[in-house]
Length: 276
Image (cartoon, rainbow, N blue to C red):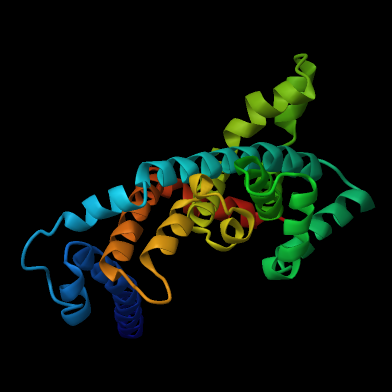
């Protein structure tokens, strides 16, 4: 009993240290967003003496922040919606299929998870240019959907494996077709996994910098990470106070999404890993 208490105390201390390491960057982000550039450079870790709001006004005006926010919102929301739609149907079909073709298809998606994006970046950009989809929101939405679908398909595949096929058999006896069975019975049962996939993909797509950098050059189509970095950080000038403020503004929507869906994420990942 004493050994268990000591083990629990040590685990609590370790988790506290890890939590502190995660909180420190957030602390620096928040306090420096409310300080002028001089204080950010000289008194980086100090708490702001006054509530300096000029950073938010400057970021809003200099970067045309509403446009950047709209671009990020459209690209992220459309991509996530398509990922959920296609991945859930593919995962369901593969989970209910048997044979070498289904197994090879799942293996193909698993292999796609370990291919680094940098190795296919240049061919993808050339392909999108040939299809006249480069420098467009539609093009980047298509790429995001394709790149993120393998992981989502595999997660849905594991979640569907946990659902009894008898539900579909009952629906078939009642006259429901495959499409109605999926959207009326199976897909609602996948809501924890759907929430998990929405959170993971939204966080990644919203914060992604590399793909918009190589695909988008039009200033009116840039996302928040790309649009703010181009103005705040350069070879001869680093506006750290404005860059930090822009990061804080970009973080708020993701924080709201996570707080709304957080209760599903652990349950969704657990369901997806029970069977594979």
